[in-house]
Image (cartoon, rainbow, N blue to C red; front, side):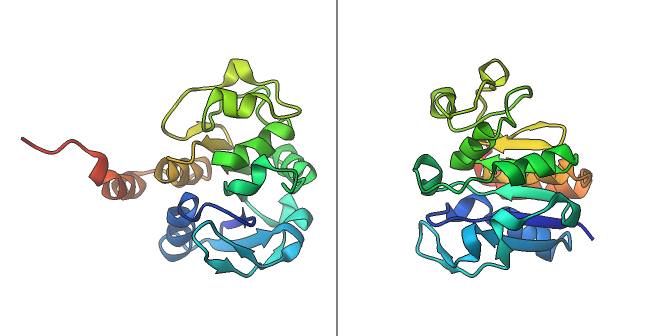
Length: 192
């Protein structure tokens, strides 16, 4: 069974991993583990309270197939958790590492974006992150960008973020393509 660690922080963006967590559990049958800084209960931007399954700082790659960092308000502040050791552990072990919106700052600080294609909310959003030297690999894209086992996305791309995570984990195919089309149908031009 595929096992994903999803990191949520205080002020996490409700929409950024909602499609992923729901479909991973209910459709793909993944074991989804919610991790938070210090294992504390967190509250989303929308006010939803979430209890943690485990402590984010204690996550180890040998127990999971992937690490997903949800964006939110904390990543741009001094209160952002230091997950560099966790991110480096997953990267070193060849596991999926994914970040959306503000969480791409955590990946940048860890050096995970320095030598591979990636995206974020904007080039200038990520450029000043300490430890970031990946400007040459930045892709200005409204969709998620996948480079091997690394997936990044702007906060406006939760559907392609989920899809690229599934693809990175080897779950590509017609079912996934149909799922993406179904949830992205509202963005298609209307027939004349």
